Picture: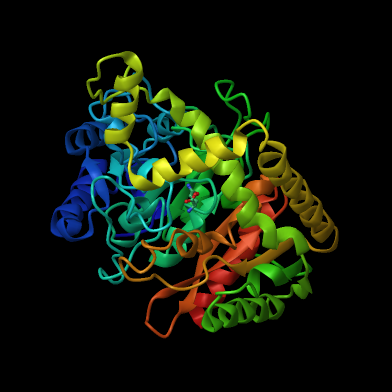
Length: 475
Ligand code: GLN
């Protein structure tokens, strides 16, 4: 159905109508959504109205913007004014946000067409979308496999052709890992590069919003639209929006490191490691130099994350008390109502995180757990800073394996957590990283190569990603 860039160009010149493009994607959703379950809600009427508004603007001789008429799927933890936003949790049942997230506003202002709210692991906690209260999403490449998570619905929507673009959120890998498992591009920007205003908080010092797309160029198009300072997010960086579309794919003279610990960690499938090595060879062929770089403390990233993220979650999720949002279960007094609501409204994984986090923050344990995890976080930042004195970017696997079958890891939370061993260190550091499809595993399913860069290093990251994408296409 064409790239997002081509579709927007066609709409801007009047060669195609936004309505016909939107109808085409809604038809694709009708044909296969019953099987895939990428969406919690398809906002058909709103999408068609937005498309008509874009077409009317073109008819008046106005330019609707860089996303003119392009369908965009929104993860269902992004606030949409008047439209249910569930985080795939029962506790938000019936809640309609009174405002749009900044990214949603920017998509609309750029002429983009939101087509629906995509499924996720409840409150973005998970790596397979199996933790959704509304049932899992299936991987369009093989419906017997998970799409990854937590932004599994957004990744699947793009992979299935339901929308050329989608937005997700990434706290420990939730954009990159599902992108890898579904064979699409997924980007976690630098912390603060994209406004978090209107993103339902999971772990506020780690959460970032970013794009999914079928190509590096399309991902650049959407990231350019959503990035840039926002006074409504106090952690937003006072930098102008990116211009990644213009960055090109020239890697001649760039120094690139293979992140040793992330590529050789336990559980990384040999075929995934081989894909990273082949990507490295392709970068050398394109004129870059490649060396192996050690980031020693990266191996502790997962442990630190599973203290810091649950600690933040236990605090952020305290607001779901049966009073301010959605669900309320009765009780004889307020405390019992709070407890009954939270018991009925939260799923097992969310409860597990709240308990882990509350424990890690409790008096007497705080320094041993939370404090220690923060010190590990500092070490990771230092090790990555040392690495980036020697190289411009790093590469590694995105995920240890290709997409796994449903149920394969649900009984063993640690096995599930290990899905993010390669992606978590960049969240702890606040750095950007992205996943680019590169080759297939023995099961015929896609493998993702991760490109990592220092804070605000998106331009170099996109150049490397383009070179890997180009090599993958010709391989
Ligand atoms: N899978 C990780 C977790 O469960 C990361 C989730 C995310 O990035 N939102 O916490």
